[in-house]
Image (cartoon, rainbow, N blue to C red; front, side):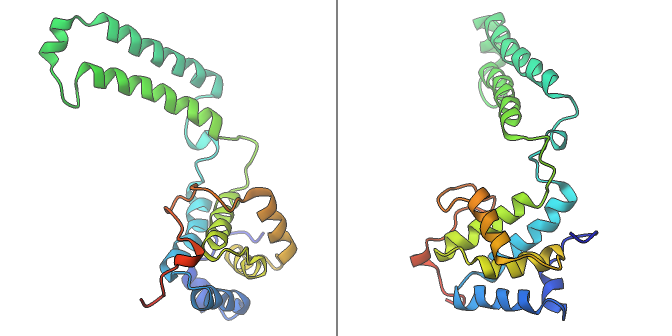
Amino acid sequence: MRPGRARTCAQILSDPDTEDARRAITRLTSKHRIGELDLQMRIEWFRACEYFGTGRQWKERFTIDRRKAERLARRLREDAEDLRRALTPQFKLVIGGGPLSTDSICDLISHTAVWIEGSLNETDDRNADWTLEPKRELTQFIWRSTGKPLDSVLADLVAAILGLEKYTYEEQRKFRKRHCRFEGTDSIFGPTPKPDKIPPING
């Protein structure tokens, strides 16, 4: 992979050396009726992930190690229950309801423990490849929107985004088989239209 930043949609469209990618974008937006803004957002997502990370690594979420986080989650859950038991009914009445009611506060503390434990399950310190998440997002979006994987078209587009001299149909096909699913609601950009209900570009 070339050093430096992932290319934006505007850079790809203005670069004379990315003819295959420009043709891929035209094919996706014209023939396959992919919304230009929807496609652009997913291309820009590469640069965002390169700069900010994907949030899938532990160090992108926490400054403490996993073992300390496990203990913190356990303490938070216990503290929430201790607090719930410690408050008298009279004091709960004084505090009242609303967003800062005693029940709401205890629920927030408990939920924080769940959130930490979710991060323990979702993150992976061994996988440092920031390109995995945006490639999966783009691949699944095209696949789900058109009903076809379009691996050769995506190979040209991914090569231009990442500045790769070569990224083949076979590499993209293997990536899709290994990391992507046709069914799912895991897009960060919301639901993808069904292939038979894609709105026209100018409609």
